[in-house]
Image (cartoon, rainbow, N blue to C red; front, side):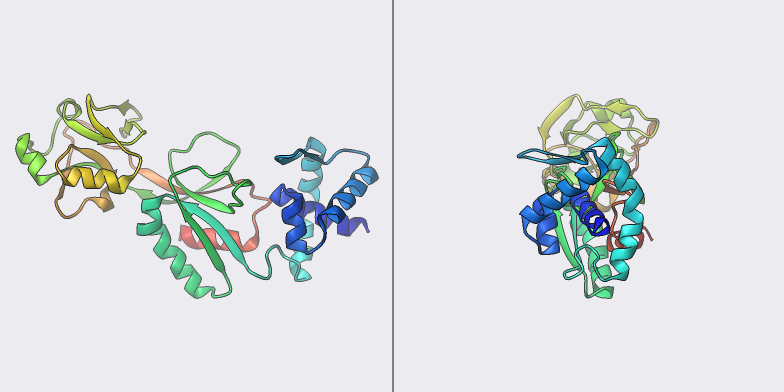
Length: 277
């Protein structure tokens, strides 16, 4: 029946994968391909472009998905046919430090309240591909690049400049410090510029090391190798905050990012709502 084929089509479109749809529904891959072909014959248009590496929706396929996704989701849930109903798995990625300090504890709190849910968390600073890596949603620190992804703001992250006590004494620094003076000091940076609250970007003149891991940057600063910009929650122990006399570091926000609002399963939406509280 065409209704069954439409249901199958929404699963393939969600994952952009014939094989994933076949595994989820417990039917042979050949049957998935045949039924999608029959659906395309029924409408007389190509719905999915398929290559050896990827599957993508055609314009007609996207239009059909927008029309049938919501009613099909409702029917699936009513019939107990919801996506991943057996395992209730949510696949998530988050930056390494955030996974340890903020994201991880909140995810565990949610998991305690929802014992049927299985969370697969990948802690990485790399931007994983939602479809290739089968990610339901990602935690990402703003500002975000312009894209077609949906982003929901979760909580603010305060950033500040910091240095070790020995570094401060060695360079005779007295807080607050002028920005021009700070930019002349040895610094430990990541690949990102230092952003000020006014929107401008600055770069230290003496970059000692460039490291894309905040824990390693913190360790280098604790060893007195230079100053750095870090989330304020990481400034503890031997580290001291350096206030600026004539500028302020831009605070950032944590976002939940996902490919499409219409393709978001209810369990993922509920988890994001929890994280936003």
